Image (cartoon, rainbow over the protein chains, first blue to last red):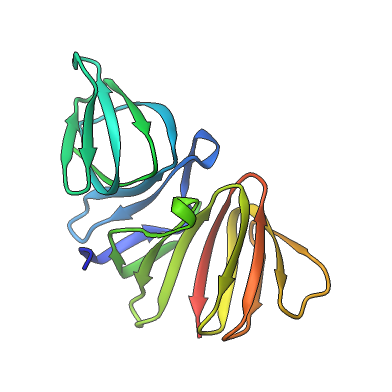
Length: 104
Length: 104
């Protein structure tokens, strides 16, 4: 049974990236934290960060490469990775990737 | 500025349909109503209903045809349509469709 986020505020409209191939919903938790719940379609993407990001794969998988990574690394459901503030990371998705992202 | 749903509970993992081409998040509102916030990629889909559904396009557009419709009808951002309980409807999406669905 999937985790639930209680007493939260959700912005109804999705955030849309790469013509909709990546989209997410912004959630403000009860303690004021921002979390985005996102979904990626098959493809290759690059994202820039303006804060430290903790990405957790909820379902599906993604292969990623951060600026300082020598190799690509795969992350599947239940695994997480961090991306430094003011950096970027590349993502490749084969089937789909359901993910959450929190910021610090 | 997009509408916000306050004091809600969100199921973190997405509902995944058509290999992820359609996915949604389940939200329980403060008064116990279930709303799903979903996103459709380009393609053709058919959905069955087990309750009356009120679909609202938030962004993008979709063309739909319900069982009793003679023709296809386009719905763009801000427009809604209802689908009868225990029926089905076909959907065609050209770019993407961000939508909400409530049940009664």
